[in-house]
Amino acid sequence: MITLDLSHQVLGTKDIRRALLYGANSPLDSSTADTSRTPSALRALFTQIMSFFAGTYAEVFSITEGPPLHDPLAVSAAIDPDIFDDRGGERFQVDIVTKGVHSMIQSEVGELGRTKVTKLPEGEGGCRIPRGVDLAKFWQSIESRMQRADAASPLPKIPRQELEREGVFAGTD
Image 1 (spheres, rainbow, N blue to C red):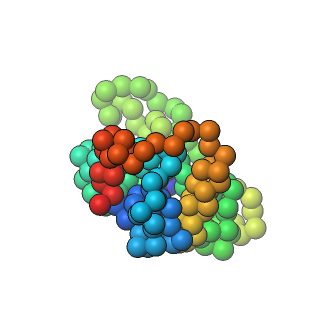
Image 2 (cartoon, rainbow, N blue to C red):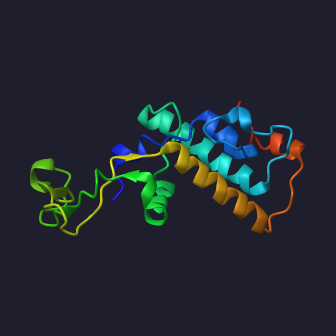
């Protein structure tokens, strides 16, 4: 289970968006990006989506550094669990409160929809709730997957001037 506490540690900052737009040896260091290269259509699309959410998170939630990456983080937890800190194997019982009334009046709703977790004894199976992630490894895995997607993508090459006209570079400079 990936919590908001964790996903808010993984933000698509301007530097990250820039590094992933061009491709970088180290996504946490956008100076390693080759900005003379025209980004692929796939990278342009990914950047535009992240930039859209960056604006939305800044406007709606006052998170101005960049958008949290909820879904990519959850997928990474499933395919690359070793980059996450689960405090040595802690496991939890997770229950969702389903009793209650759907109402606009909070006192009638009670705890309906609330997630409750209980730490389980060591060695007992349950839900894993990581508290941290190795950011360098996470972003490198995203870059690696972008490279593989670029290699397989059927999307046509788009001239740099068209990418500029479409605002792809906005939010990465």
